[in-house]
Image 1 (cartoon, rainbow, N blue to C red):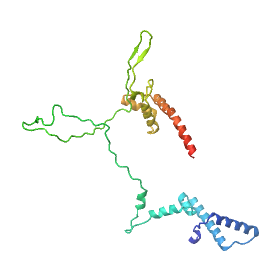
Image 2 (image 1 turned 30 degrees about the vertical axis):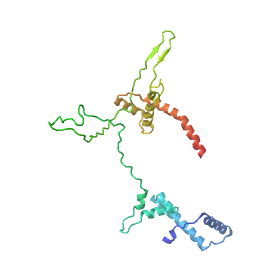
Image 3 (image 1 turned 135 degrees about the vertical axis):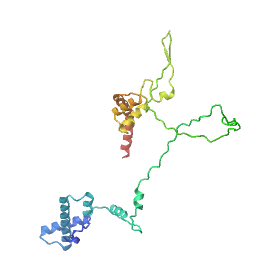
Image 4 (image 1 turned 180 degrees about the vertical axis):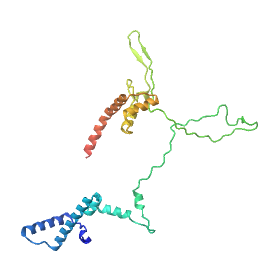
Length: 255
């Protein structure tokens, strides 16, 4: 098979439709096709034979099939040419590839949320040195220790509220809870919003099942059953439902 004949020639839709019209007209009128039309048809037949051979041998990919049919876009050809470029020394030129690479995230340092200063007991600047008879203490650089510790993601704290009852009208007066306690949930809510959020994040972001959360909490000394964790995650979903519908309505309007 001649290589010149198997070369795929790109043809637009208008030219292809015109070729089909000429072939149908020649068949109806019993006429012969022009030499150029016959070359196009011959190349199409060779292309179909080549595709059939490749498919039978199962040695063709989708990208190879698109290249064989002339369907590779210019942008893809240009990307391949850029990847095959070589510099003056004959080595592959990777400067275009380097632009496509995502920069690695810089190593993040742990920043302390609280700084605690520890002072010497019974000693200050100007005092005599306790280790030698003639020395005097002077100011020196502080020594820094960054201690990273861990606690359980949950912390149980019992709030005991003082109440007084009138012996005449039976009216009960209760002490007010701190504002930070009320911000994390109502007065009758056992699991705060923060605890519910952590349970939902573990489940739907980290992929940790309710059973695994129950086992982990047992190890930390805060036993919470899987069914309870499910109920708290359901409460988070119910609280977020109005926001979900609002965002869905806004996106539908934007589209």
